Length: 243
Ligand code: NAD
Figure (cartoon, rainbow, N blue to C red):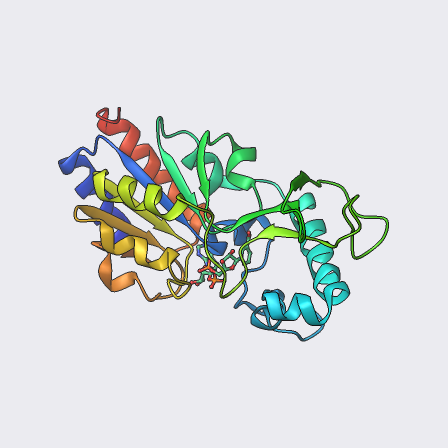
């Protein structure tokens, strides 16, 4: 980890990036105590995420899916942004493209965030498609809209399309940036994982495990997000060229 981190810092010092895009996945929030889908703590009542985060699972058993979301919502409510979220928020004029639905980048202070997969504290009426902020626990599950139809979490489930325009905007920003940081993503959830291929310049991954995008990045730092993100951000800020 130390050799790759030092090499990445040296590359930042020599290339002096003027712009950065940060692409994050569940791993950036692991250090805040929110389990990733594929970690041991990510299992709930022995269900796999792939068996709950689908439109089919919701159609079959909305109560079960909502019970899982209420558990996840309580974990996120109790969590705090970690050193990685806080460091990323120090980068001026930097777009964060996240697959996370936990809102921790915004809570850390990041201003420009594309949430590719929605937000766990918003609901959507399945009939009217209207969205509502829903930060507090529900008294009754599953929640219903005033129109009588079910509410669903306003998140993107496996097999669903991303919010309109979000991928295109993210892809343009990734292509046009000097530096891409890829933090805590397995690189197996598409289309988000495909964003890495839009970048031509310097790219740095932080992930304690090899991922499906490690070999596409210039440097792969095998470390936790909270450990390796702050020194990289300091190097970018020290270069003094970031707009
Ligand atoms: P994933 O669960 O598939 O993979 C997470 C990655 O993070 C893994 O490669 C793992 O090695 C890495 N990781 C684990 N601990 C880490 C740490 N401390 N620092 C850095 N990296 C670490 O997650 P994904 O690729 O983001 O995609 C799966 C889907 O899961 C996404 O669509 C996302 O919506 C959803 N999800 C979101 C949250 C959240 O909002 N916090 C949590 C779980 C899952």
